[in-house]
Amino acid sequence: MNNHRYATGERYPPAPWRFRGGAWVGLFLADRPLLPPAALKYVLPSRLVVVALIRYREGTLQYDELIIGALARRRLSVGLHVHHIWVDDTQSFAGGRQIWGLPKEFASFTWVGPTVHVADAAGPILTLRIDPRTALLPRLPLPVPFLGYVDNRWVYTIGSAVARLGRAGMHLSSWAERFPYALGTEPLLAIAMKPFRMRLPEPR
Figure 1: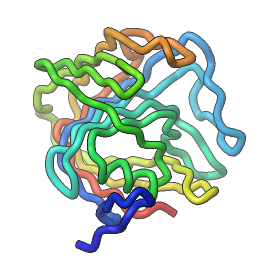
Figure 2: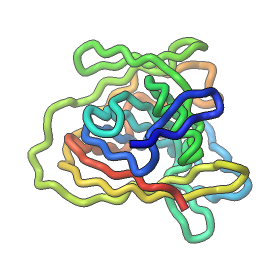
Figure 3: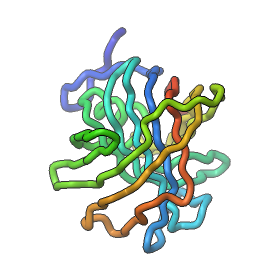
């Protein structure tokens, strides 16, 4: 595999990236509306925030990831617009920014049983409990669409996943006050992919 090089000198694998792991996704209610960028329109009510915790355990890279975002539309393309995204891997940081235009930042993920404490250089971000038990339902194919911004243009990616869906069991016991909105402790709706396998192609 010929790795590409980020502006900082960090190398990262070229797309597509392939993974196996687990993911927990919840729709949380914020205490105030969120405004999309001018080029996007939110698909759901503006107080609904997506929180996704993903553990990539096998594949192109292995790392933990936390995503905060909202479902948005640009023209006919609908996918997740990422407000914040944190990872604990340098190659994921560089490749995510350069290939898919995701605003990745570094964070630490400290696990105590089914609870994870996520923090970055500015301090704690959140504490989240999940249900880690393997789901028993049959595997289903799932699209994974999201929007990014790279080289002064919007890009669109549709990843392809196959997953067993199950109970997420998400409980948000802490959320940093430095963010401009607060989130409820329980999601309005949540689902887990445990396990999943996924392929992320280059964006268009």
